[in-house]
Image (cartoon, rainbow, N blue to C red):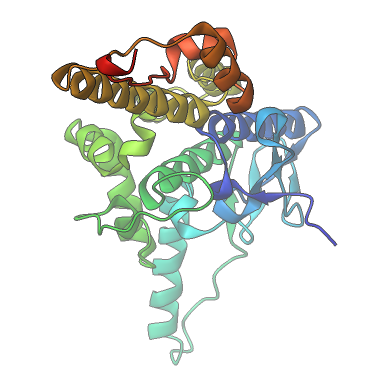
Length: 304
């Protein structure tokens, strides 16, 4: 049976990648509008379904989804994977982790009180922040389409700093990432060059989430940003780039052949019937011949 979807990092075009991220944000918004919080946005819960030019983002693993409460408080559990958890959630979880350690250290004491059932405050803003980490993770870890990983090591990697199991340390590193201006350059430097066109997008998204510490981020903020940058990307930039490189190579080859012919005293003229025949055999249209390969024959001056 053929899988109906593929992981996000197995995107085939840059535009497909950004479109999938946009679609995930839209799915999150639709769920919230129906009173549901997905609760667990991470790299392996976001997928792509369909062919590259008309694919859609897909959010899976809804088993931890929760009904939104009036006070946005929920029992702890199923809140995501550490590298993708928001700063606010990490702060609350770190506090609970510290209390649990203290209780463990004093569990032999009869005076130790059991902790009350753990509750955590969470909103859709946390899920949108998680989606940002998914986006950044792909741009740092991978070097292009089809899951091609970044082969060179990334010094002082942000991903490594977000992977620590010490929740308090992870929280501090993420808060620092948003609060300190030099972190923007650090993020941009760690993006693989393939994703360079997305530098403006990630910078603006980072600012939105930084401001989220004071004013809650909205779906309109993030979705509008993604759609704006999505419109700037070509439908098939890999195909366009390949054609551009082929044209450049053809022009260089033509120039080289023409130069050699001139140095040898040969004629570079070509008869129209021959040119038409070659075009037909090569499947090249008249317009293509002007911008791609120029057909050249060389005939000795003495052969006429």
